[in-house]
Image (cartoon, rainbow, N blue to C red; front, top):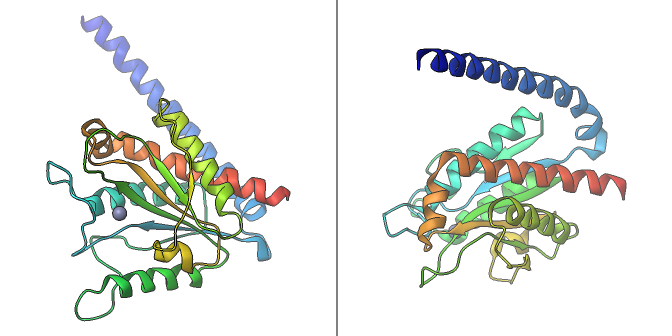
Length: 237
Ligand SMILES: [Zn+2]
């Protein structure tokens, strides 16, 4: 057993070494390419990551007390970490459990206005809002991407939706959908903009997955990967 354990730990050390080496090489390659691909002159785009809700506004609450605002933030922080790793310009709308409301008492409308202003202030923004779904029954499961009517949103939404389904919800037949007027930020930003419902908090399996760090990192990787895929497609047009 000791021999096996020794081999296992040696393999683990070698594997970790390889992962760190790969990450370091990726960092060098993408950091070098940043100037060419994403930050050159007027073509620079900014990934705006918006963890929905926050502070007094928890959003949906799961049967076990999990707050949507906390899940949204956990996924957004991972998304930002990966964006930084790839050297992508980015803005994180909130970094902690707060709202973006600057009035004395909380106003949902003012909060949405402040978030919208942050998106529109960014240089060539591409907006990804992170939320979780909720439903009166426990049956619905899977991701749902909603895209704004702005130019590029539909393509970004469809790429992201497809990638989420393929990687995390292969049995889902749901489609990306256009937004309705009631989604304030999507109808008030002037850039490619999507809202990603990463899963259903009302579904027991989805909720357990959404709480897992590994699953959150997978979602973050898909969001950044979809953003890169969309950006590279847009450059060819
Ligand atoms: Zn929400």
